Image 1 (cartoon, rainbow over the protein chains, first blue to last red):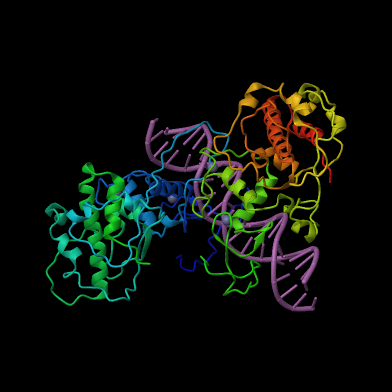
Image 2 (cartoon, rainbow over the protein chains, first blue to last red; image 1 turned 90 degrees about the horizontal axis):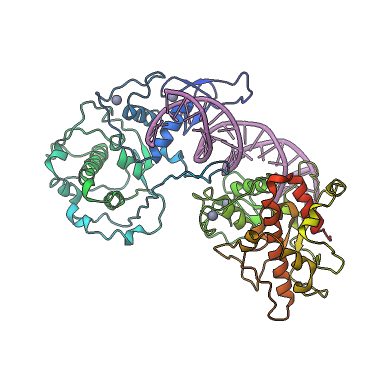
Length: 267
Length: 267
DNA sequence: CGCTGTCCACGGTCCACAAGA
DNA sequence: GTCTTGTGGACCGTGGACAGC
Ligand SMILES: [Zn+2]
Ligand SMILES: [Zn+2]
Ligand SMILES: [Zn+2]
Ligand SMILES: [Zn+2]
């Protein structure tokens, strides 16, 4: 996670006067310790937690390169959240809601307890239209925590993307999803970061997984493992775009189910 | 999780690599040994200790049936603490900062041969109003450790609850205390668990002692030993409810004293 | 209202130590 | 003496509450 810092990054002193202070890796504000794996200030800590919890879709009004500093960190939530991820903040470290404390007046918060199904065995899905027919009531079985996990070493044989039904299905998806690209590409194609994030977070912030690079289905060379992984991640974003475009017609939990059906946990 | 570990539940290996792991009886998290008499994880261990120490009143926001699992164990303190008790965690094994030297025998004492009989003939207490008048400065005498002990075998003859002044006094207590019932009854009436807990803990978490079943003072049959014990436990909860309802007017220590005056330790 | 961030209570990991075996 | 076992406690990083914006 964190490379060997010259100093131990744990906030050793809680003594009131001389508490060791560090610099928030996100915004540069002063920090007193690690949060979700990263030396961060309290503001970025709370922001990250709320971002993981709340069902907000962030978008950047500018060119996705907003600089995040102490004074301007609230200008763009999209770029702030992406910097949190880029700096290594771990969404899995965000825990569940806890018991409330007695001192409060009754406050109501609706936490959508999204459950995902576990898909075992082969990834045998058809076109998206057939996926939609999946009975998701049955799929609501209590498997509490699904994650989207992408590791760098792809060891098992991976079928060619071009021949896979997923890829075939993708080609039928709406053309505007296919055409959707991002103006600013943040990931180096040969050096994708590893990911291990809750599927829900990935669904809500798909560009964490991959940038919307231009899609190209024509084969031009034998695919390497890196190619396959990159394609897979790009396809995930494409699927999410597609699913989100039907958001008006479906329940959110249902869409989560669709995503879950498509991508199974690779652990 | 270590599922197939069918070894005796003493954490034999502390060796770094293959330390034997068990499953916390409370939440299912991995555990390395017994805590307070029960195979439990470190989290439940600390939670139980703090619950016995701190002056917190837990309450369940839901229906008192919250499932306690690793991921969701912090959602309801009430149900977590009750599960600790139900699984056999022994509050007496929680030591105090002061008297640290508790013998292992004391810690491992499950439920000794100590007999409880509070409903003896000479327990002449009057109505609660008279109890309030008790000089509690005198009662403040250093009696550090009171226990509420209920064992299953009630051997000595016990007078009928209906004729006892305790029962008579209860009938004068506020009607809303009488009417207070719990939506979910967890104890099987014919199979109460034995109890041996500090009185303070019982005072703070009365539903450990008994559920708030509907009260009925009318005699309809000769009371069995089981009936008397059940009534006594139910009455204890009623008394605690009553005492707590006057919390605004009295010091907590005073209330503890009241309870202590009413129920004395027979160890 | 809704989001932000300060501040605080508490959760859980890890360790020293004490009592037995 | 060593080893096992289970304490309390320090510690850091969680979430909660609430005021401010
Ligand atoms: Zn920051
Ligand atoms: Zn931006
Ligand atoms: Zn546990
Ligand atoms: Zn509960």
